[in-house]
Length: 96
Image (cartoon, rainbow, N blue to C red; front, side, top):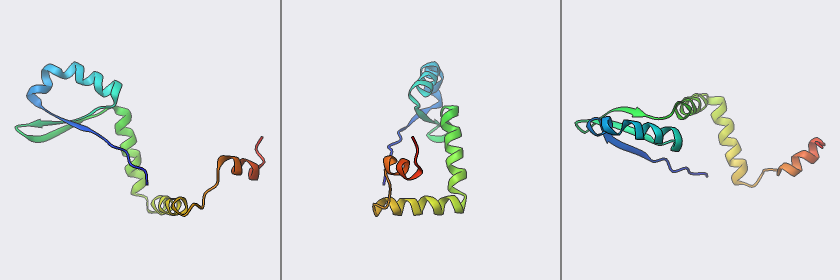
């Protein structure tokens, strides 16, 4: 199975204010994510719009039972080496 490490940084509202321009730059350029806290309690999440849209799309896919079943079946096929290379598929489809 594939794993992707996602780092989410935490910053207090008090510390966010003076660092906001730099944090916004990091969100845009590095895809950083931040949990904003107020008195130690999480109150907001900051991430890029593209990151947010991707997350919402993933939730839509995972909430669709048919899609989820197909993903699980594909993963089983992959784990059992029941897959084809791109070259094999092109030959079968006679793609030039």
